[in-house]
Image (cartoon, rainbow, N blue to C red; front, top):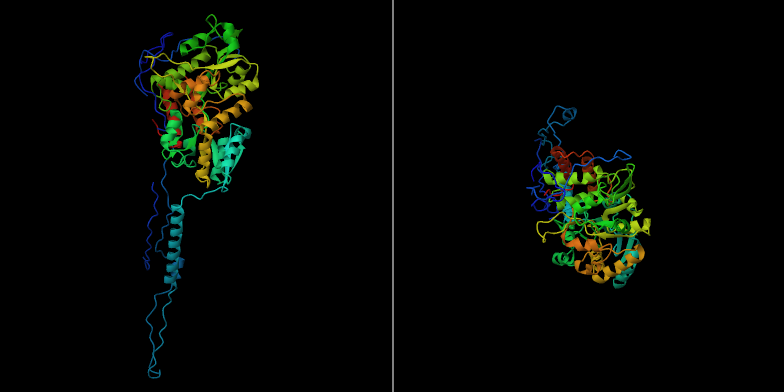
Length: 551
């Protein structure tokens, strides 16, 4: 796209470049030691399609509105010189030849000649022997792999999403089939979860199975065991789960996690607001923008005296909008932009389009967090994963809501895919667990069709809403579901990246660091290439901290 091109209100432009691929697409020897004893020695842009950004008047409102440096191993170096030190002066003089007088000895008697002391060579031999023994032990320990930890036959499982009651029937059935195995599930607090898990693994007190977000494999690559082919082959795994799952949960060493459910960003709508306004849900971003434009008749945004009484959509800000990182990630893929290498008009258009909703007066930072605001009936449209349905219903059980498919950019041809953005949780196995094989067998058991059906029955009973299955063929039953149906419809073409909210990864986690970098840019965004370069550099430094390939 030409740099001077402006998004037309009815004719947005999509570049004809492919979306960036997901980033997830030494032999250690023992050195030979010899001892020598010396004696005092982003892309071309199509100008016909892109996110539309218009000049909008600022409405009156009630408020103002990595790279880790690679370091080699540094050895301890000690220089010893031949000097005239006090200790050198204390060294004995070389031995002199010994003379004996044998004239007075009886005939046939050999004179007595004292032998030199042999203590020094003996000490050297002992030291060499000890070094050899230490090298042998070290080699054997290295050859045998890491020391396995945990209690044999007892699988400790850390989860974060669901209570033990959700899994209990399945755990009991597995224990009945494996009488020598006991599974202990512990639900963890979301507070500092990723940091506590990291510390527990480092201290050798980690669980055998632990729940990780779909964006975390690189953060735990040294702690995650690979799925053995004896439990499930890579071919079986690829055929069983959605393509985005295979991409997310595969590292160089192999498959490192198994999901028990699938989720993605979707669009929640307040059915009463739409019915009152006699409007239908938007299918494109242009339609969504028209629906919330307060200057147009029938707008879903209602303002009185400069104050937002009802927001059309939770977009445009970062302070109080949940899941805005996923929204930005979705827009990046839809606009064929690269969230890791931000240098073209495609990335600039995404940031400008998102910021536009704040300038339109659709949202501001005086409103509650978007999930709460939607739950209270003050927002017509809200973006979030389907797991948020539980939180919304808990806040307001009388709210009539459902989800619809995500808005898309206009297509060149009908066969062009509709993109969505995956964000979900999965289960990994600790590399140092002595129950690794059994733990993987347990996870495979949980992903069997019968087990997944029972798991969703438990979720309906305890949380009120099911989750989409990680197996595509099982989701046919959800095509018309009011909550997960919209996610299932777009799952085969889902994308994902490391922009994710509500993952509890702590300030040093990859999600939080990327969120902070993008947030700083959006706060002061003016559309300049210089700002893109600064953001791009910050993003790449974060990715390199975790050895994530830059694509």
